[in-house]
Amino acid sequence: MRHVEFKPSNMVCSRLIEFDLDENNLIHNVKFTGGCPGNLKAISKLIEGKKAEDVAEILKGNLCGQRSTSCADQLSIALLKAINS
Figure (cartoon, helix red, strand yellow):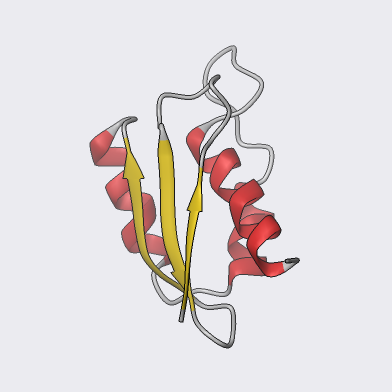
């Protein structure tokens, strides 16, 4: 299991996104520091055990209000970086 820590762009409320990827790129233990706790906890529960590639595709481009990104979009960036490194 590989632990990943990702610092999102400063355009979102989350200051840190952490997660684990297993040998099959399945997502585990997602944790956001900062941001909207209820929504981010829900995202974490919904994606537990899912394929990183699939989740990244679903969340990619999700925006928050007038911002050009969101915590979910930043998670997709973190997932893609992790699976391509």
